[in-house]
Amino acid sequence: MKIDPPLVVQVPLTSELSGRLGEIIAERIADVAPKQRPDIARRTIIEILMTRQDVPLTGLVRRHVAGELERLWIPKRELAKINRQRRLIFIESTILLAKSMRKNKGWTKVGKPKPKLTALEATAEYFETSPEALQQFIKRERRVKKKPRP
Image (tube, rainbow, N blue to C red):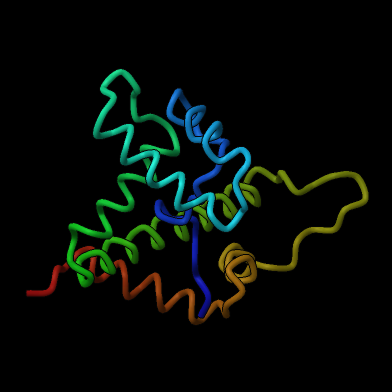
């Protein structure tokens, strides 16, 4: 079952980062080989955070740093639970979007046929999994959310 929504840590470090820190990173990685850019960007973030208080931590850089700290400070089991809950939120919002599109008839245009898939089937197709597996994942994670295990 392949269910991987965009998470916090999956944001690559590039020159398209927001704020002054993004501009500094862009300057430093401009003439560097593509394989070395993430390492130089990480070292630049550490250097800026340690030495310069006038540069704010905003946008994607803030998310990246938060994701890295989360990965380092939170135990693996607890982090896995958090990531499963994030996936559940993402899947539920996708199903809600599919349902509202059908309810509001956003799919109707002149000459287009009515969709044959249900909202759950369309979401399962998006995540490249079966509707049954997706339904089981949703049930299991909702149960965990309601009743925490000791």
